[in-house]
Image (cartoon, rainbow, N blue to C red; front, side, top):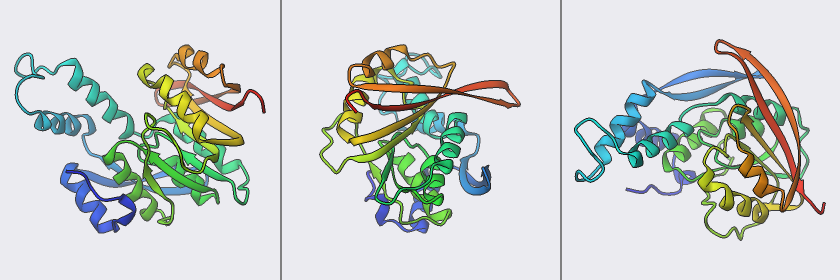
Length: 250
């Protein structure tokens, strides 16, 4: 069953829906000099897999008992993307935190997942709209805006496949939004429609994720600069690519 616009929901209503679908706990996540309250799914992959298995009707998606088809595994992978705060999100959030807010400059976070980058940018003074296509991701993002003191931040559903006819944004940001080749054409088209004249797109991704085809499609309309940020942690060294993208003719 679909839900009303998440902007119409109170924190109690949002949390009731989330808890009816997932077992969650509130954790503290430090970004820069700020501590954010973030909902984390306990035993994430096990919960998501259980949710998917229960959502299957009939036996057409099951080849053998206990075995999931490629279609269901794809759903599992897509859900896994939005339920985790990936390392490039921290890089993009910190980058937005260092960028001085400009009056009248509107920022759109695409493929926001739980909306942590957008929340952090809003707390740093930017005029942000958070967007995703996943209903559950939007619920988590709405909860995070309220929990972290920025309930005014719009959280909206945006489908890249549909023509974008609303007011364009001066800045568009996204973290790990180019992992699926099937979305490349529609994403490039969406960015062209949703970016205001003279605007800039900032994308962050794990350097290990090879996406030459996406940038091959981008160069028809856009030019870009790349910066490599090296992160060290428990899993060793990771390199994050941060792209600044503008239209070719600007």
